[in-house]
Length: 80
Picture 1 (cartoon, rainbow, N blue to C red):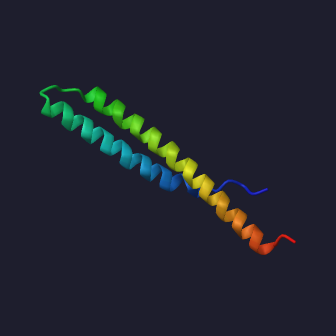
Picture 2 (cartoon, helix red, strand yellow; picture 1 turned 45 degrees about the vertical axis):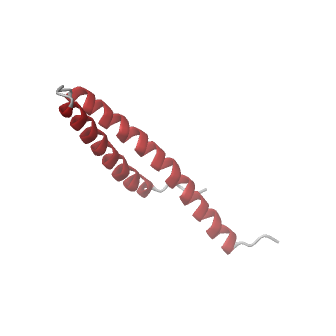
């Protein structure tokens, strides 16, 4: 059995950080343009964006790496 690859977390964290930053900026700008000041809402949207994008990217990357490992295994040991 293969151990999990810890490098899967790096692109997922980068994607989550980018999504969190964009969520925070967009919410902050929309609050400012409407005349309201809502930093708490911007932070909450940023955190929610970070979690959602990070989890989604992690799922996709785990499935991708499993598929690659399965393909490599089939090349080494072809089915008869």
